[in-house]
Length: 135
Ligand code: SF4
Image 1 (cartoon, protein in one colour):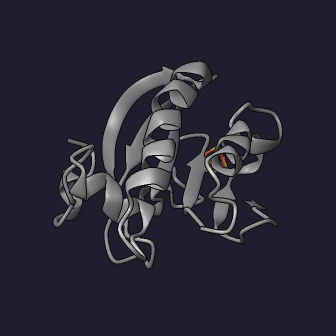
Image 2 (tube, protein in one colour):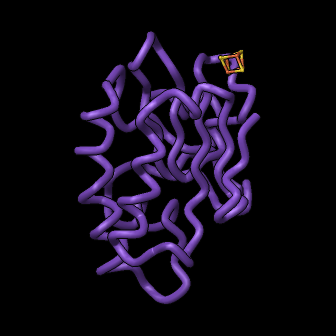
């Protein structure tokens, strides 16, 4: 398992050392959010060892270099995330997330967590029943 030394809130299986997704860190810093933790969880397959379904941003590997992207879990573990984009590559992931992260930096309410923001602004619906996270 990998744990993000910067924020302490990123968790993934070991694939993170070999993939491009750490570029997300640069995007978060570019948006001025380096001191505002966003819970990111990534796993290489649906076994979910790093509990991707609990990430405000979650990734589950589908094939080499391809992931399902999930958004909207509760920062405190109070809500699962929801499928946002299916089977996309790393370039597509960064293209999807960059504008959302920058919008979050500009438009979030005081104290609003990223997972709550993406629900309030309509990117995903809140998951209130576990079986709905993948719909
Ligand atoms: S089983 Fe899947 S989620 Fe768990 S460490 Fe291996 S690739 Fe990652």
